[in-house]
Amino acid sequence: MPLPVRTLPVVQNWDCHNCGSCCREYLVHVTDEEKKRIEEQGWSKEPEFAGKSLFRRVKGRWALNDQEGGCIFLDERGWCRIHSRFGPEGKPLACRVYPFLLVPAGNHWKIGLRFACPSVTGDIGRPIRDHLADVRHYADLLLRQTPEAEHSEPPPLQGRQRVAWDDLQRFVDALGRIIARGDDRIERRLRKCLALATLCREARFDTVRGKRLEEFLAILDGALDGEVAERPEDVPAPSWIGRLLFRQWLALYIRKDTGQNAGIARRGRLALLAAAVRFVRGRGQVPAVHGWLPNVTFEQLEQIPPPWPSSCEQLLERYYLTKLYSMQFAGPTNFWLGFWDGLESLALTFPAIAWLSRAFSDRAAHEAVSLALRIVDDSFGYHPLLGTARQRLSLRILSFRGEIPRLIAWYGRTAAGTR
Ligand code: SF4
Image 1: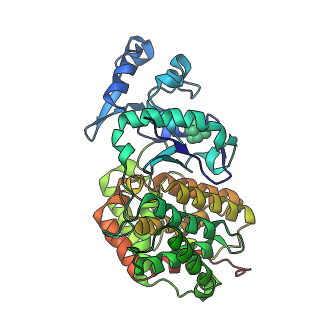
Image 2: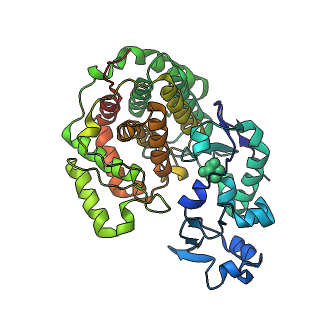
């Protein structure tokens, strides 16, 4: 029985513009069935594949092999040979689904999007609803690969505290309403979401359910305006521990280890270790952990920038609404983090994007923020080191000490102050 797919309550457009970025950036894992199907397509008899392996083993799983310039199946024009000859049905499911993301949510799938794709960040193409027929087809194929998605449990709120999917959706809706309210800058809206999370973490939901939960969340929401400092300048600065731990998150959100834009990882483990030490020190040259990072120092990236134009605020509003309503930030699509922990890890992307956008100060602000967003979202929920016990502990410390809203305010300051 196929699971229905629910689209996003967010105005978002997309079409593939064949930039080839995804074919050059990612390692594509394939199932045994997909490997067999591609082998049966007869590529090994073609002269351009003579002596080359179509697949390689990566951590016990099969993946498409790559070569200089990206996936082994890319032709000289940058097009996918499998797609050209056999159509989309011939490709692995991972290639077809991108940049969509299907998040199991009990009795349906939620749609998410990867903002690493320039057409998603740029909002270029047809509305997402026009792709629903394709996404439903992908969802059916994905259910065959992961039948357990049909009975998915909601991620816990925190620890062992769980609510049903419907109530989890009520929390998402409350957070979504805060992010969609354009009367604040996005940094304050995120601080309000964290303030709501703090209040909810302290409450017990054993008896508050359904309509009563909605009323409870509406009361909390109404109180946030008076609780959350209006200007980022009025929020205490992050402590040295907060800034040190944040730089470790930065190093992971920015790091690119595979593909044509891989950074220092190309030079091996020792270079990566040296880069990690430099991020801990936070002085001097920022290590080139991503191929797009220009020559820039940590000190330069601490300079307060001019205010962002409204287009940057709108881009980030679209981003956070998409991440919230897709629920990508918690459960299996974000290293099995609980709901509130996942929200905090999502909120940490804001200071990371704001910090990184300063590295592209030679470009227009919207382009700089778009580039920073593409880099950070490429890692969010994907870079395996973000799911380690060490990062979970780091997130707990940042949360317990109240450092995350401070970091958001600190990197959300602008030279002209707030409006
Ligand atoms: S990155 Fe996006 S626009 Fe570029 S080829 Fe992939 S899906 Fe298409």
